[in-house]
Image (cartoon, rainbow, N blue to C red; front, side, top):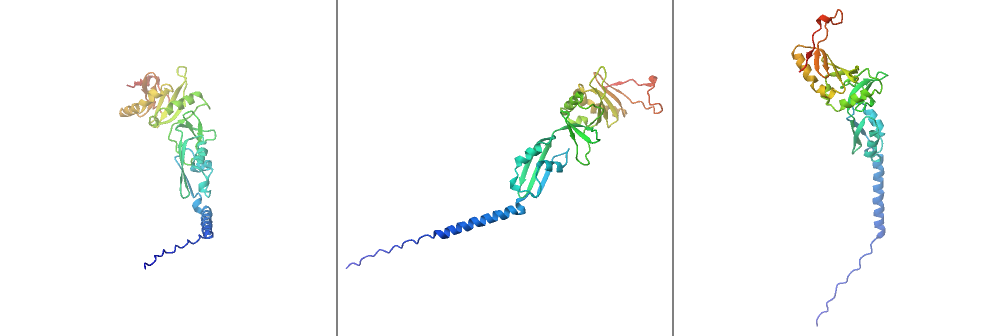
Length: 266
């Protein structure tokens, strides 16, 4: 007799405990929420450092004040674009880039409009002049001017505006030896100016001639020094010439019969 083969009894799967899974999910969400709360209340979520770079006319504190963020603010609640828009509103700022670096560091990189010269304001403070002759008060402590000083100009003088525009289109290296520029109009040259150099020369030219003449100024001065001419008046007009200063200390005036003829510059 053939033994009957019996099939193994298949056990029914135990019903899943849905209550346990819900409990685990609840605990997971609870702990994640707790961790987030603790994180946002910790110093890791706060701004701990604000750094401003690139500014020359204003202090880093003024840049930070314009940014309207401060230490302790929530790092994730401020946007880079929002800070950029606020700092860009400053008159001297041409562009700004803000970088957020976790944890807690905000870097504000500023590029200012090119400055062409300086002047002394009514209150005696240094003011920077931009290409359009816009005036920017310099508030940076210990600031040393690195551009010519404009003196003797009337407020909002159109010729000063023209001068600033012309200077903005020329290399700053051409003005490295120029310490001061003042108006010196005449009947023949209404836009005539005088420039005083640190090398003890007085340069007479016009705003119109400036782009053409300034590029040769350093060469002229170097050649004169090679010929033992330590100062004098350089007239850079239709023709270029040099006249030495009168060295008679007793009278302070030139004697007509001793006045040297001007040296024509090549």
